[in-house]
Amino acid sequence: MKRTALPLGLSALLVGGLATGCGGDADADGSRTVTVTVGYQSKTINTVTAGTLLRSLGYFEQELRARGERDGITYKVKWQDYATGAPITAQMTAGKIDIGSMGDFPLLINAARGRQLDRPTRLVSVTGYNPRGGLNTVVTAPGSDLRTLADLRGKKVSTSVGSAADGTLVRALERAGLDPQKDIRKLNQQPSVGASALTAGSADALSQFVAWPGLLAFQGRAKALYDGAALNLPTFHGVTAREDFAEKRSAVLEDFLRAQIRATGYLRARPVEAAESVAKATGLPAEVVYLYNGARGIATFDPTLKPSLLAALKEDVPVLKSAKLVGDVDVDAFADDRYLKRAYGSSGYAKALGAAPPPALSELWPEGGTATRTFATPALLLAHLAENPGTDRAAYVPDATTGTPWFADRAVWVADGTRLLPFVAPATAEAYTAGHPGARAVSYTEALELAGRAS
Image (cartoon, rainbow, N blue to C red):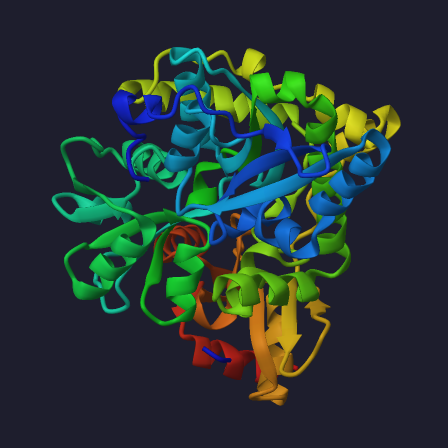
């Protein structure tokens, strides 16, 4: 196989407070021009249906072009790329961004800041989600002897405070019996800075969101310590819009959501092509993009505001309140699916709302191939690899406990009789072997040998 920052301060948020992102002016011929500003995170790749992929496909521009032909207005789209959700919120509450995408914890900060500054926002759709929380992962250096979260006591852990990954870290530490404020030294760093800190040894672990953990594991610069799906709490990224923009330009917002629906359909129908497109735009390896955004990737793409996701969002509020990042947030008032329902049509929305993630299967991306192949069990995938060495561009297997896909050669493997079981993190594998007499940890090489002999 080939190989957040804190939300900006009040004064910063007020800069340009009278500006407007969706503005209009007169062209030379007297026609009206409206510019729509979209904030997105290119490397947070489970937002691609409202950002990177959507931009490359040009669907939003197509929708606006058709609208312009009907109403005589020239619409332009201004795309602004950020590393985290915090600066998008800052620009939205300053009236400079109309539509933005970010993770669940930043979405709550977005809602709180909007209310605080009398610039309310609305959660209007979802991009990618994981029903158990697998979009966030804690990783350590490849040679680290850390094996469980309890081993982080007294250690330096990099994360982006206020991000979804920080929320996962806080919850996971608390479940492990550690105080997130006292028992670790938390480093508040941008994802790229934290990745460098982990590589340099100035951080013992890194808790981050898609796609950083998978990227570092793929590059051999990190190994998983904790799979966020062990929390069994949904995580997602979503689209937020300024309330004043939504009210004034509701048809334009619906055009955006129609474009997002189209981009979601494209990603589902052409997952390999979508991964290659996002890889080209972001510089990320396509194999990493596919880990998250593939046909059976860690993220499921579905724009609907599912009750389970909104319920999880409500459970996030106390975590942010305890960190003094927000006060009370009315999630029910923040979530607004009216525009998405109109974009789908009532029957279309109801059908989409009831959709579930695809089943977890092992998947092979052949070298030079434009389509992937699935296997009913990890052992069958390993047997194929044992018989056809060097023919895989990437191989993905679902964690035996959480279902989180991971690279086959980066997984922790357990042999239990004739079964070969992959796990994202060592602690999960050890929990399995402790409860299954005779089960034992094996290396990836040994797992391949066992699978080859059994085939």
